[in-house]
Every structure is written in C-alpha cells, then in structure tokens.
Image (cartoon, rainbow, N blue to C red; front, side, top):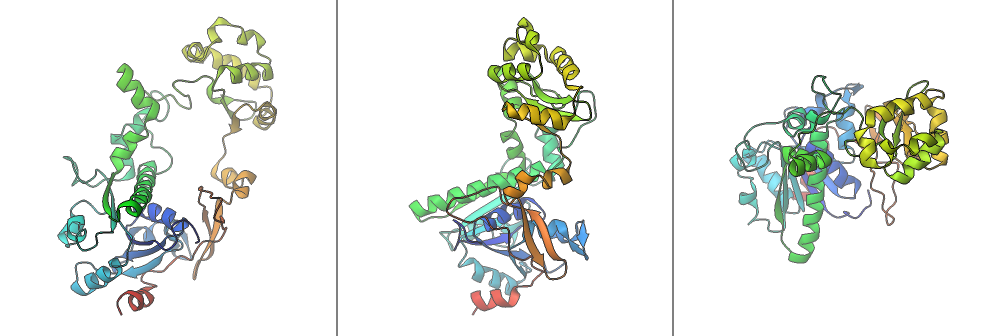
Length: 381
C-alpha cells in the first residue's frame, strides 16, 4: 500500500486481535509489516473460525498485506535473525504479558541503547505498571472491569458484552495513535521511545458521559438500553414494522421532528420545551412518539425524516450494514487474496486521505513462515 507511512518498517510480534489490528492499520497507511510468529502453529488466531478451505477468515481479515516469518526467540539462532531485522526496523509492536520479552533479553531496556531510534510499542491487558500488571486479560475482562458492561444493555437484565471486541480494538487504536505520534516526535528529536498501552486504561478513556456523570455528580450510571443519558429524544423507537433510531440532539431538531410527526402540541408542551425537560420526561415522550410512528414502516419514516435532515436511521443487521450503498461508495469492503482460500473480502480502512488513493485491493494474506527466505536474504546477508 502507498501511504504516509511508506518506507516505515514495522516488526510485528503480536497475535490474536489487539496487536494485529494495530499493525493492520499501519499497513493500510503504507508501512511494511513483518509478522514474527511462533514456529508452533503461528498466531493463535490462525485456529479461529470461521474457516475458508481450512484457513481462518478471522486471521486473514487482520493480517492481509503482511509478511510472515516463524522464529523461536528463545533460541539464539532465531534471536540473531530477529535482531538483524530489528537493526533496520522503525517500530516494534508486541502484546505479550509484561515481562515476557524481558526474560528473552528483548525488553525496552535491553534494546533502547542498541537501537536508539526504535519505537517500541507494547499493548497489554493492564499495562507495564500497577498491581495487576502481570495478570492476563481478554476483551470481556476489561469490558467488565472498565465499567463498560455496567452501562450496556437494558435495566434489570444480566450483564451484556458490547457486540464487538471493543476492549481489544480501542487498545489497538490508541496504540496506533501512540506510534504515529512517536514517529512524528522522532522527526524532531531523532530518538525513539517506549509506548505502554493498557486495555483497561482504554476502557476508562472511552467512558465519556458515564465517567463525567460520576466524577462531577457522584452518580453511578446504569444501563439504559438504546437511550442517551443526556439527550432526548435520542434512542430506538418502534414503528409499524421494526425500529428507527431518532437522534434529535438539540431544540431546533426537536422542532423539526415535531413538525414531521405532527406533534405541534407536544412541541409547545412545557414538559418538552428544553432538552433537560425532555430528558426528565423521556418515558412520556417515547409513548407519544411511538403512537405517531406506528402508522408507517421504518423505511417510510427514514425517507421522510431524512428530507428534513433529522438524524435517523434503521437498525441494520450485518448483511444490511455491509451491503449499504454508502459503505460501498466509501470502499469499506476491500479485496485481498490467499493462495488456498482464494479471493477474500474484509473491512477496509476508514481513514481517507486526499494525497493517497484508497485502493479496493490489499496485499495478500501470508501463510506461516511464507516469507522466511526473502526476509533472511534481505536482512541477514
């Protein structure tokens, strides 16, 4: 891929989701990514379904466009190959449990003096410091401990996981931000740095309204279904055939919504005059709105409200979402290739840049150790 990170070499010591998602973004932005995998089966996600001709679609979706070499970093010969590659590397990314690479003599303190321009990024469950630093973590662990599951779902229901691995993905995104910031800093200082990202920290960082509510008012937020805690109307409403999301985020939009739903009396009702009052009377407002909305299907209401530029939309399943013409127009479903699985589609890069083409084609998916000969010839001879 051509992009702003062209000529940046990333050595990828990661597996499963946090790290591979981060290095996938770097690859989409133009970096060359060499993925170092265990000789004993490689990245764990190579064994995760769904499968296409016995190849993991999960792995392929995250590791397109990378090169693969299998190395056992506990062995001196493989460690020597690794250090030879590292000599020309700009960014090292790893998501081992803290202390693991230090045991192999490959921690930040071991490498920073030998490779002073190296940017060394570590993403882990709880970070490199603190009483929990040595514990393992998975996505749902940090969703729970980070408070996210306490505000997800409906009142009086069992704890609900967010439907995507947001604990992993937010950490991947923050790691990517840190790496790009460090590359910019290196242009000014000539020095690399260590980046420490904790999955748990990232969950705290994205709590926005919930954490502001607690820290300012000492209120402990509870799950509210599809509602927003500070804006109304801003949730899913029943229509004749399904649901519609309506997000009237200010008084002007509420006025336009009332006109569209023939709710002039409600617009003049003192209970709904301001957003604060609408939030106080959410239940009553929802009953009134759903009486109006039940006469038409979601598609009809969406078309009607969109004409007035009122933020709204249907609730799509994954098929509907992927096949949305807007998604196609934005190149958000891309093509890649695996020599056995064949042509393969995956999610694209949402970062669009005026200076670089957003290609529908990404690099091929590597088999385990597929690029060994090429990499050793380039870096070890």
